[in-house]
Image (cartoon, rainbow, N blue to C red; front, side, top):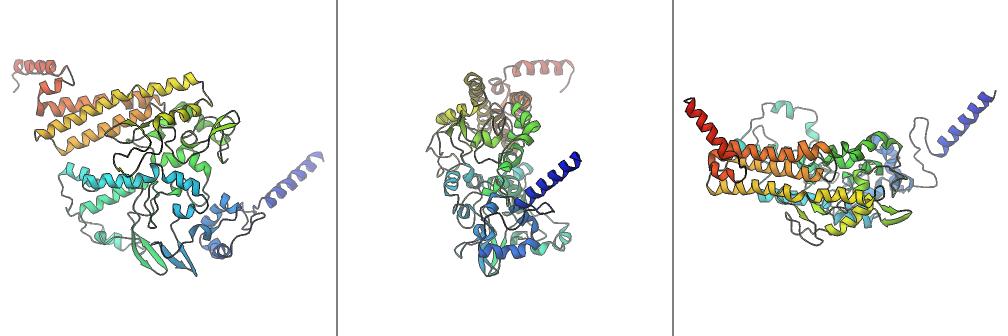
Amino acid sequence: MKGLKFLCVCGFMLAFVLSTSGICEQGVKDTNPPYKTFSEATTECLECHNDVSSFVVNDWKRSKHYYNGVGCYECHKTDESNPAAYEHNGYTISTLVTPNQCASCHSGIVKEYQASIHSHSGLIAQRAEASAGGNFSVIILSMLGWEPDKIIHQKFWKDVVNDPIWPYAGVPKELQTENPKIKDVVKIFANYGCYSCHGTVINVLKKTKEKVVFDFRTWPMSGAGTVNPDGSIGSCKACHPFHSFSLRVARVGRGACGRCHESEDHPNYEMYGKSMHGAAFLSQAHEWNLDSPAVKAGRDYFAPTCATCHMGAVYQGDQMLYPPTHNPAAICKWKLGMWKLTFVRKAGEPHPALPSVKYPTNGIENRKRALAMCTQCHTKQWSANALVSGDLTMSTLDNFRTIALKIEDDLKAKGLNTPLDRKTVRDIGAMAVRPTEISMFHYAPGYVWWEGVYKVAFELTEWLENSVAPRLGDDYVAQYISWIKEHKEKVDEYRNKMHIK
C-alpha cells in the first residue's frame, strides 16, 4: 500500500506540474502563458499559424519571448519604408526580422553588437570581393584559365525548370537560362559558402502588395554581417536561431559559433573539440545550466564554451567584474582574421579591408578581461603561461607568411607567376599560418604541431623546391632553404654519372 500511495502522490504532483507549467498531454506548451496575454494582432496570427506552421509556433512557445508576451506581430511588424514590407491579412509585416526590430526591446545589445566586427563581416567580405575584381571566381577561374563570361551549358536544365519547386524560388534573370555565365554560377558557391557566415546583401527580386521574393543567392542565409533591405547590418538569428532564440544554442561551442568558425581556414570548432576544454564540454554539457542570463563559471558551467569565454560575464567570487557582451572579440588581443597580416587591435583604428569600420576595443585592455576570465578557474601563472606562449609564436608564423608574399612579388616582377602561385600563397596564409595562430589560443595539440607549424613549413618548402627554384634559381631559393644548392649539386652529379639528360 505504501508503494501504491507513493506512486499516486508522484502522479498527482506530475499532473500538477504539467498543468501549471502550461504543458499539454502531447508535450507542447499551451497557447496561453501564465499571467500573460498577447496583443490582438499576435492572437490573430496564432489562430492561423497554430495550424499552418505549428513547428514555428511550438518553437516560439519554448522561448522567453513567449513567457513575456512578445509574439509574432511584435517582432515581424514594420512599415512601408521597409523594402521587405508587405501586407498580410490586414497587417504590414516583414518576413525578415532585422536588428532594427530587435532593437525595440534590446537596444543596448543591438548597439553593442553593431559596433563589433562580427556585424560588419558581410561588408568587409564584400569589400574584399570588390577589390579582388569579383567573387571567388577570380581565384577558381584563373587557375583553370577560364574567363568569367565563359558559358556553362546546363545539361540538366529541363529537370531544373520543370521541378515543382521552381515557381517558389527567387531566381535572378542571369540564371534563368540554360547557358549561364560561369561567374554567375560560381557566385552561388561563394554566397552559400562564404556569405552564409559573413552575410549577404539581401536582394529583393520582386515585390507585390502581398508578397516579397528574395534572390535565392542572398536569402535564406543567416550570416552574422547580413546587410538587410531596411538598411540595418547584422543578423541576431545567426547566433540565436528562431523562434526559441535559445541562449544554450548560442553558448554551446558546437552550436552557433561552430557553424562558421570551422573548416580549413579557421578550424576553431575542431580545435576546441580536441582541447581539454572541449573534452569537458562534450562529456558534461548536458549537466550545465547554459540558459541563465549571465552564466557563472563553477556554478552554471565547468569549462568554457566559445560564447562563455568570448562573450560571457566574468566574476570574482560573487562580484561581476565584466558583464556579458555582444562583442565576441572582447578578450582578443590579436587580430588573426586577415590571411595577409597579423596585428594587435587598437581601439578606433580602421579595419584593413574596410576603413570605415573601427575596432571597438583595445587588444592590450582586452587581455585584462581575458586574464580575469581564465582565472575564474585557473591561477594567474597558469593562464599567463598559456597566453604568452601564443604571443611568442606570432612573429615566427608571420615570418613564414611574409616569405611567401615576398616570393610571389618577386615572381610577379619577373613575369613568371601563375594563378596557382596566388592560390598557394593564399593557402599558406589562410590555411596554414592563420589556423596555427588560432590554435595557439585554443590548445589543440594536433593543430599546434601536425596541422600547424609543421604544415606551414612543409607547404612553404615544397613550393620553394618544386615550383620556385625551377623559375627563380637555386641561389634565390637558398636564402630561404639553405640546403637547396647542395641538393642541386648532388642531383646534377647523379644525373651526369647515370647519363641522364
